Amino acid sequence: MALSRVLLTSGRPVDLTELRLSSTYGGVLEGYPCKPLNDLAIAGLVRSAEHAHPGVPVHLIPPAREYPDQFSGAFGPVEVLPAVTCVGHFRSEALDPGHDRALYRSRLTVAWFQPTTRIPSGCDAETALLDLDWERLATDEEL
Image (cartoon, rainbow, N blue to C red; front, top):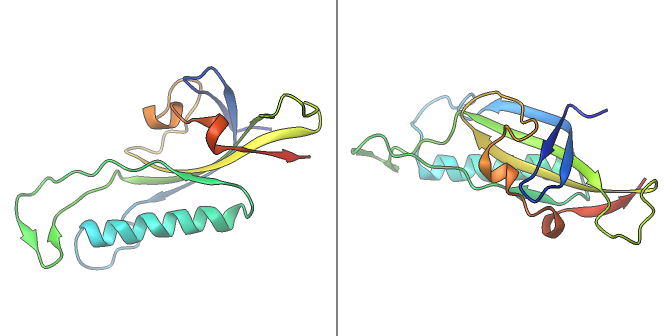
C-alpha cells in the first residue's frame, strides 16, 4: 500500500511507497552552511539513497541554494539548502507496454530537498518532483 500517490505533470501517477525525511543540517556540529559542506551532504544523500534500494535507479533533484549573507568565512560564502532532505521510493505501471501489467512495475528512488516535512501527494509537491521524466529515469522490474 502506498503512502501517497503523486500525479506527475506528464499525467503519470506514481505511488510513494517509502519516504525518509531528515534535517539537512541536523548532524552539523560546527562550522556553517557553505558550498563544501553542502556538496558533501548532497553526495551523502545520493549514496544513502543508492544503499537503501540497490539496483534501483536514483535521481537527485538539484536543490535550490540560497546566499543570505554577503560575508564569507574560511570556506566561502554562507550557502543554505532547504531544511529537509528527502529520499522517496516510487513505483508506477510498467514502462514497456509489452510487459504484463500484473507482473511488472516501474520504479525509481528520488532524492530531493524541500523547506517543510510535508509529504508529497496528488499535485501538491515540489515542482521539480512533479516534473520528473519518469520514462527516462525509471526502470521496469518483474514482481
